[in-house]
Image (cartoon, rainbow, N blue to C red; front, side):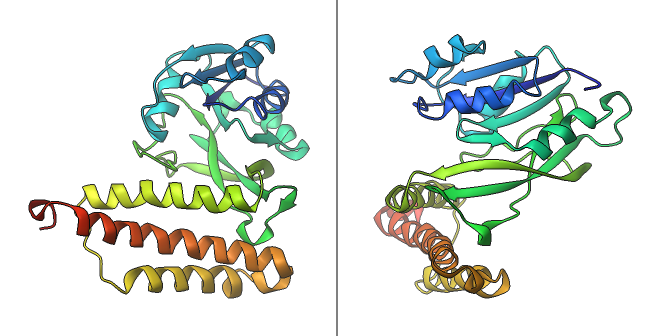
Length: 254
């Protein structure tokens, strides 16, 4: 490795995942910083026992929380991870091979393998995500959920982030509803107008995208499930938005 790397992880009640994440992270990092939103389980204890620096901070939103970590990093290059993520062998080799001193890019993106339980959802692949970046050149967008690094000067690499996205199908459906509510809240706060047909149209478009354009039909049960989950999440986002607008005082509906 040409330069030392800091890995940052934001957590909340991730005791079943954090050990594997940190053990994976140490393969490329010389410093790991965990910013925890006051977990009530053993997340902080496990992280400390594995050598991570642990800082407590109330949740600021996805983007702001990830950026909050940066101030504690001693290195210029940062790899941001979630507690339920791991690095595969190819990703480790690519990170170690980068000449950071002469890097022409501000950041690097990796493919992500998303799982429901033990099943890799190929229809969601490659799901590129920018995670390795120079802390003085990039910032996360200040979004409540599913933020991304705000940079155009990045390179896609071929290594994979192994992402244990959901424990099982029930967890997937529950969180689809939770995430869709958060997404709807953002739209509502931005006074986004929505028609009665938009949830169905949005859901159908996402289903067609995953099942046909991304060839989900080739993956049998997994392809159909992933396509339907994507459609459900999109449908619920706009359905929740309609509900929020209907329940809001008349002054907020304009």
